[in-house]
Image 1 (cartoon, rainbow, N blue to C red):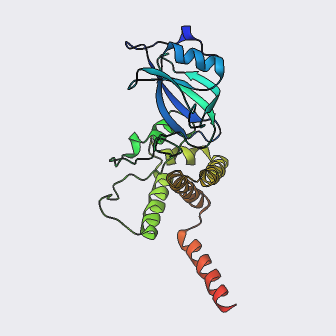
Image 2 (image 1 turned 90 degrees about the horizontal axis):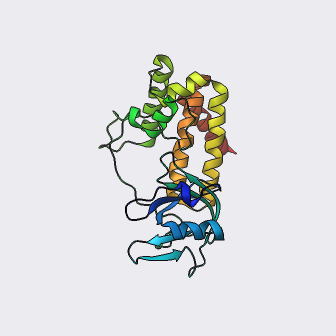
Image 3 (image 1 turned 180 degrees about the vertical axis):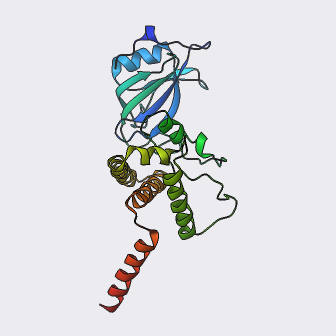
Length: 244
């Protein structure tokens, strides 16, 4: 934690936004604001202090609820006008609603592969920290399709990415990086799925399960294993169980 008061550029109101993340899971817990005094107390106490814009007063996170946040690291962005606080949360609650994170409301957005945060990050030669499906989304989001049909469409899209290797595609990045990279991502997504399940966060578990399935499909395509082969194996096991 090498941030000092002199390093931070506060805005016209004397505030700086702070993104609070779980130091272990990297889940975003909340967004709050600090002024010079709350930042000073955070640095001295090792727990988060913020400035309440609605009450115009300092507040020590968890002082009354017990859901304090022990600061593990503070990071300042490249412009010195925003902070990330990596914390060990106590009590598992960050939001005043009682939720583990304040970010639980999903927003429907029209997505495009090249504008995906993961695609952009991968195209810059970096490994994605929060990966998403490479689906282009010419697959008509307005009409709900069954899981089997969706998996088949995604598998076909991944196969096409492997053949054509278009620039700006996260799937292209994975295939270009090779089998070891794909295996590493499958392992990482498996671990993140386990963490989400342990944290009892259904939204996070859903997202991580989707990431895991996507990377597993990439692995199947890379190794030449079809969805039909997986289906037949499941059917064989089901039939065997039924006759046991």
